Image (tube, rainbow, N blue to C red; front, side):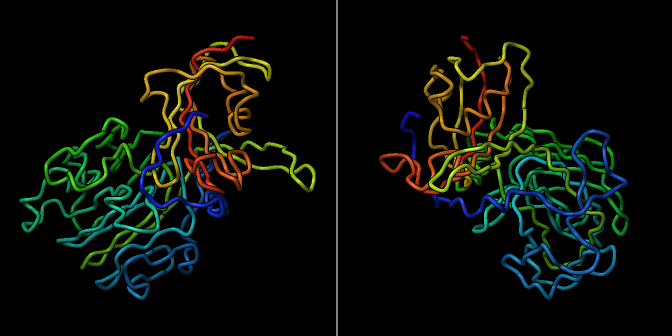
Length: 352
């Protein structure tokens, strides 16, 4: 791979790879024939699987079907696991003047609203919120992208969210109505002067935690479930102890309809490579020049992921260290040791 851009953010080691694996029991009522299944994020009993972030765990209460923040100072409650591409369903209920949010794809450090994304939950009609920016009301990607208003139920009633994160798409459905649908890779600069101090959406992580927010009022959540849209791909490799199997994840953003390469093919691709924290370390798109090389010359994760694509397809690959640059990293320090990498790859052509 060609030397790319390092950036100045913290690198995440391959030790977090296991956090990307989605496990848990199935919600039978949400199973889709032949497709990914919805899995509960809340077990209905306790806070297993959740971690208090910048708040007090005692402010959060597990009470049967409800997961609630019952006192002020709850801050963020986040999942133990990280998620990449998914559909998240939940219901929420807020009182008069209520203020909450759902955090998406954020790292362990920093305010989820500014280092990841926050989909706002708010009593939009409360007098104290009349002067807010458009992107601070319910369904808005906080401070970044405003939602359509008018579909929030009155305070004290249950509302439903269905939030899709698929590649650069973030779609928010409130009570059955699409109120926000954006492509985060289009948000390459601050939308307003007050946003200039925050990282543009296009440069934020594509993988991270899911969180629930509590300010000073009670908020109730229920029926919290996730559908993982990524698929596993198991690759057999040789190491010092012999053969072993390593799992990577992928999702097709665009299905190709052209030729499919074979192991001896020369392929032409456009790609963007990122670390888990969102830092771009290399991009043929930014250079304006596609890459053409034999498929077998690429890292193992690329060989496995691209070999199943068809020309015209676009695929997101989440590649663990063993299928990328391993314990050595990339010469010159461009990619550190034990780095999990995320690639957005478009197959432009193949020559058998």
